[in-house]
Image (cartoon, rainbow, N blue to C red; front, side, top):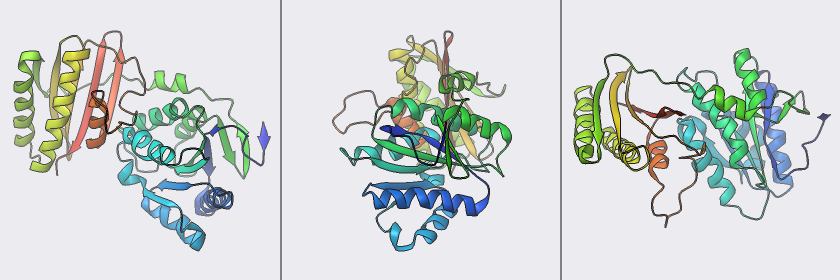
Amino acid sequence: MRATAPPREPFVHPALLYHGDREYVEGTTRFVSDGVAAGEPVAVAVPAERLELIRGELGPLGAGVRWIDMTRAGRNPGRIIPSVLRAFVDAHPGTHVRIIGEPIWDGRTAAEYPACVQHEALINAAFAGRDATILCPYDALALPDDVIADARATHPVVIRDGLWSGSPAYDPDGVLARFNEALRHPPGAATVRFDAELLPAARDFAMGEARERGMSPARLQDLNLVVAELTTNSVVHGGGSGTLRIWAESEQIVCEVRDGGRLSDPLAGRHPVRPDQIGGRGLFLVHFVSDLVRVHTGDRGTTVRSYLARA
């Protein structure tokens, strides 16, 4: 399928493959201006320097647009669906909304990339039937060929040279399975086993290890929350016990919890949390305070890994 206009469906998730700043600005500003002309709420969540390109080209037309620096709001890709995309869609019920979301850019690390691709694949399930168009730009000049191939696999529609095309490679479930990678920890990681009675000891252990590795007091509070939520989840949902590991990687402290349970909901931790909600907040909170979260789940258990900057 090739067309010059988007498909007429409630939810559309196209990848914009651009070559250079000119194509980027043309493709994104056309998307925004069409939405503004139609009276649709529009949000733009891209890296800061890209925000300035789009905003500068739109001028006064962008006055009502919601501008979001994705390098901050989407530093952890697991935060993007609930805290950026769903937050904007849910704030405008009963109307079609447009969002530009750029979660993958040149400079994402090898550790971050699998979480980014999983995020893109999960958008399709998270917004099925919702009245929204979420456009995801990809720098086809700077990004490797395998990244562009993944974009075609996670987006049902691709835009190139102004043309909208159905993607024959679209396979979000296959992508999720491929990036559900076993997470290997370094041999020198500090390790402790825990069960219900040892939850306080596990938290004390993690705090002590992180403090020795130079974690700041403010980030120690975040780590304490991460450890409390993950170890409690293991006790309640993961067979009653688990293993906690902690180590340092460059400027980050990495905390990993493994248990014998299996995550049945691929969107666990990415559902928005209601203010009056009781329970079900654990993974959401972990995503919210972490700089990156990686997850592996299977028949032999689940591993959740949280990365937190030391300072």
